[in-house]
Image (cartoon, rainbow, N blue to C red):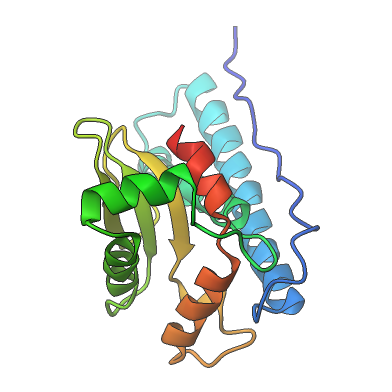
Length: 198
């Protein structure tokens, strides 16, 4: 019996409009990028399945698509986390389970936020993810250089920030990362981060 992979379906984030400072045009452009990851991931799965079924797994083409699969797939998943944790005007951290856990661990919620923001301010492109480390129970703010590199195995993403320039260059200059970070925090839905915390 031939292998047939289950493919991804792009989620509908078209209602993500009216964010504070982050323009609707910016989100529309960002969603085009996200949909591209869905298309390329599905194509990779289909191609790999066909090659497997044809006995071509030892080829350089098969190996390179395998290497690329993590980049493309995480391009879907990380963008979904990112879009999910945004809402127009944000939702306050005060009183949420995320705030309580962050404050208990870091000494205050502001200390956690400083650590997260400082991680995001580092030079380079990538992602910043507030993970729940299932081994220690700690929230750990992690810099991810590429979509598939630097993740804590088995850790749960609680809050995801896209730090690739495509996330803000439709409405800000490439050098205005700090303004984008402020805009991100103005739209963070801490209820979503708390729901992910469990």
